[in-house]
Length: 196
Image 1 (cartoon, helix red, strand yellow):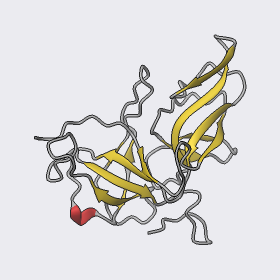
Image 2 (tube, rainbow, N blue to C red):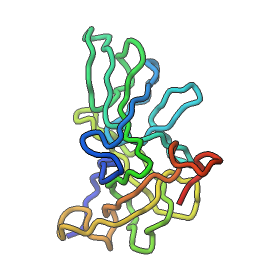
Image 3 (cartoon, rainbow, N blue to C red):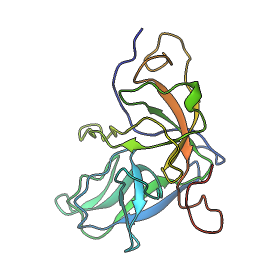
Image 4 (cartoon, one colour):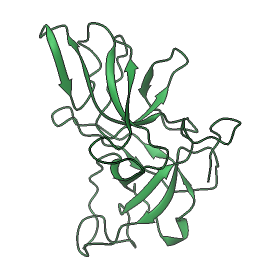
């Protein structure tokens, strides 16, 4: 069965932490940050001390967004959401991120197949289109290459259960397991520059 394009962002696969938090940490998004951030999106640190939805590139990733809470201006109460809509906060937004440097994530490949030969290579992400109804990310990964400062690294392919979406490892839109590469807690003493 061919794979179907249905990206869902970065979904926790494993890590050094334990359930239910997987070494989840909190950070802040500024109340005036109009960039929506969805469940499963990569998040990057800003020079202001805040974080924001990451832009594709050789960016440092702080973690993977898994929800937020803030005081809603319109509802006049604290709300917990799977995504930050980009407005309606009085004060800063508390975001929950998976920051375990050893975490691995399930993610869908883009329009090019990622095969066994790509395991161990660095990989870029694309944000895709998030879903404001469910709050789910639309992020996926692009074709791997040797650029050492890319934010993720391919760790494995998903082939089970056979016939399920994403398990045809010979076709585009297959599922892969990735780990952090250029991430805030993965350093070599000189800063996060892509650690294999």
